[in-house]
Length: 326
Image 1: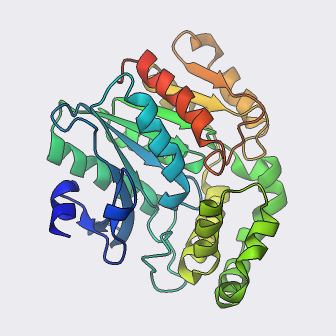
Image 2: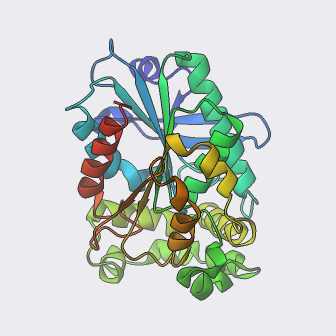
């Protein structure tokens, strides 16, 4: 365990129950938050492939649920792709506070969007303190993680680049999925759903495979860990309610102010974005030479990390190279 601790960044501690030495090219740790929203979040760290050449750290901000394990295939593939351009890239993926099944909080702890923004600001500050101002810091936000990443850019203005994947950054409640599913996020439904965790624990694993037949086995395991964790499932549902209430008017001024550092990736069809995609693009049309917008193919869905990690990793690596980030 001592070797793991020395390999992790100084602000991360080894995970108390999981041993990263057996998990491939990344290390698993925890970050103890002590400021506005105290608590412990799970983190995955991909050290750069050439330890003497570290020049860029990419920080992945998950969607909801903010469980880091969903993103392991994507981030592993991304580092492999980026190695063709730069072996000095390290990657950090940090769970939303309260969303890690392995680090349960007291049941029905209410942690919303501000908590997730504050913890990412702590991550940013830790990275700057540990690695200095010469290291490039790139934030990649998926879904609501895109909104969180933009708030980090707003408050830490020297973030080098922000990549927004399937961004839900305006009027989530008006999207097709927002209209269909928002009832699930209103009280007392989150409490009821999350209380079913013990029942989910006894379900045969084959049920998860039957419900989601196209998912890889590893992602079924992540889903089961969420379904059986009362605190994590409640935290995800509670945060979704805040998303519906908080993420409304598009912050066009923010997008235009930092237009040279932003890159958008939209799915061909995305029911968590809906017509907001065209509104975002229209609001930026007069600056399209600076705003980078990519329309994905029809087979890369909003939840790309489940089974389309390799395809998007290739695309992201090409962006990072094109922007001279790597």
